[in-house]
Length: 141
Image: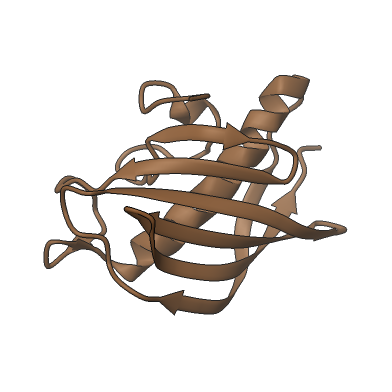
């Protein structure tokens, strides 16, 4: 494990109550894997499940953690990223309260200031959600 809920915010810009990843399990130049415990305190809990916006934000924060971790290794400033588009969003099931989800992202393309990543959320090895995300990256001056 590369980071836990005790220090995950050094790699992502979000702060509570918006932190949607607890552990950074893997990170390379092209992929990352995170874990989140679905807890009642999560602001995206609806009807005992993690709602759709929470899944999308979880994927986005996994992408942010990948960049943040790589920047920390290289000792360079972390750029700010914004979700520019979400394509091919497929939600198969909503993770239930009290469970753990694992999220993976793969960087598939980078053109100028836009990064394209494929995201996948799983619970107990079963797919909950997949999508393609375009992230606009604003580099620090």
